[in-house]
Image 1 (cartoon, rainbow, N blue to C red):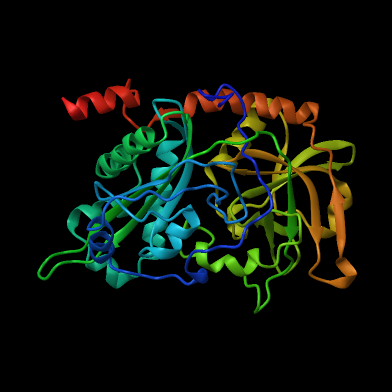
Image 2 (image 1 turned 90 degrees about the vertical axis):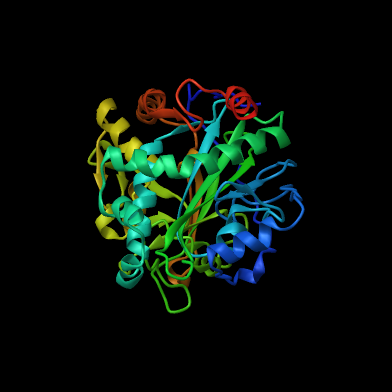
Length: 402
């Protein structure tokens, strides 16, 4: 049962020990959208069980025995990958975003921001030649960044998302909290036609204990074996494959990896943004990397910064240095699925001389409580239904039937 159904509080998801991936041994199988849609939709519908399976990151596991649903271009698919990471590794490279939906209306936070990120990420991934092959509508969506363009893009994506939502609710009638992954790529053009956009919506129920702290591995400076992120500003589905090497280096008992700069500044997690709470000259201040340092500017990260501003809590946008760890009193990670997760410990093992474990108090301080209270208010302001204004899923299904 979801205790924060309408975003009246901060939401958390269970993190636990990772399980080995069973999806393609980490190899990205890239297929044209038309080919993959044909291959999947011409099979009988068969649902994959999500028991003991992972979330957006393969390190995030949910206690969940319900069914995942995938729809591509308004067609519900059979042979659904059991994890979002498995899906992203097996389909055409494109932009994606992951968010959490609540209640019968499938309410999400920051839908416009997620649409903007889909647009900007796909524009970043596509090479100039691929851009030229797009039809005029696609070029229009990718060339501008306004509310009207986001609405136009949403009108294209929405039918597939709503079909997936209706199917997920029908398959999981007792679920009220969902992970939604939206994927956008360029479909293979037919002879004599321009390329178009293809939409995938993947939805799985989230059921599990709340409020579990997370332990993280600080992966250290990039190396040839463990490189940095090639396109940090884009939510690129290729990252689901690229990050597997990082996940293989996580210390036992940790469930997220923290990427570092060459100077051992802590940048971001594999699927999260990272904040530390530092005490400097008697002042408590939050600190997180700036997008210009090579991170993804997460939707939840932006909301945290806004909440800090409204709560009067200082936040320094500069990647915290590992050598300054003695000033850190707390830390937390953020993303749009798990929300805010307090960090219980950091383990650094990249250098024998630097091997260290830091433990943190996971009870939010008074300053953090003030930030979280403001964040809860922002959730209400930025909450929006995936089903349309004033619609619950039951109303949406009624309209589709009649």
